[in-house]
Length: 61
Image (tube, rainbow, N blue to C red; front, side, top):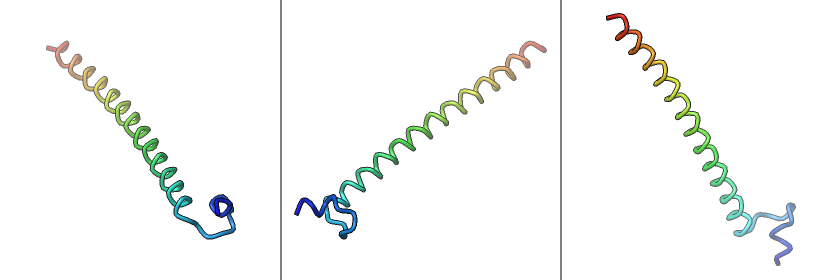
């Protein structure tokens, strides 16, 4: 019976589906982590620009 789990030509069994769900959810977690890194990067860039603008404003007065 265990042979069925790894054999690709046979219909999916519960274990196979569990493994796939686990893979998908770990991929989703990776994507979320990546998006959060991008978000942090963009926010820090925006913050730097914002600081520059503030500095320019305060230096002009």
